[in-house]
Every structure is written in structure tokens, then in C-alpha cells.
Length: 144
Image (cartoon, rainbow, N blue to C red):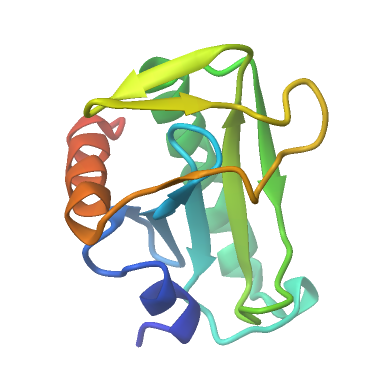
């Protein structure tokens, strides 16, 4: 069963990859190019509520995310934000961080917060079609 947080971030249109316990989704609001949401499929609203299996399965999800974004975005740092104020299901906002700009699909993405905290309010809003296209592109590049 898919939780409300995954659906809010466009699942299944924005799906990049899936492990047994985690969904990797393109974040439709892109504060930086390649911003993702890593959503746990367990029914949990606290990090400590996750099963041992979900915790172990976090490793291959993070490995895949970092390999994908290292190759496609060439990030300098990566931030994992577990905010869970609006969307209570366990999830992380994954933000590749970089100095300068990145280009994709005719759009320019600047990391407005670099080198400080991420500037979530400054973002490129992708349409449903653009988010789905980016997800398909990233899915095709997901490390095997």
C-alpha cells in the first residue's frame, strides 16, 4: 500500500526506483537540480518506528541515490532533510548541493542556498509532465 506522502509527491508518475521498503521519487519542486524524495513504504510516522528491515534497506536506496546523482548532477555535497511537519510519513528530501547552475530540459537550476542551508522556497516547479520525464530519465540511469 502506498502512503499519502508518496502520492503527494506524484507517485507513481515520479518514481525513479524502488527497493523493498523505500520509494525514490523526483521532487516536483526542485530547489536544486535532481532533488528527490525518499519515502518509506512502512506505516510509520517516526524514524524510530521503522522496522529493522526498512533500516537495513535504507543503505541500498542511499547507495543508488548517490551514484545516480553523482553521475547526473555532479553534486559537491548532498543533504538529506527529514522534515515531516506537513507530510507525517517517514521520508527524506534529498538535495544535491552545488555551486553554480545546472541545466536540464531547457531549464536552469541554481542552488540558491549554496554554501549555506538549502533554500527550499527558491525552486523550479516542474509540471506533472516534466517531473514524470525527469523521473523516467533518472530511472533509466539508476545503477544496477
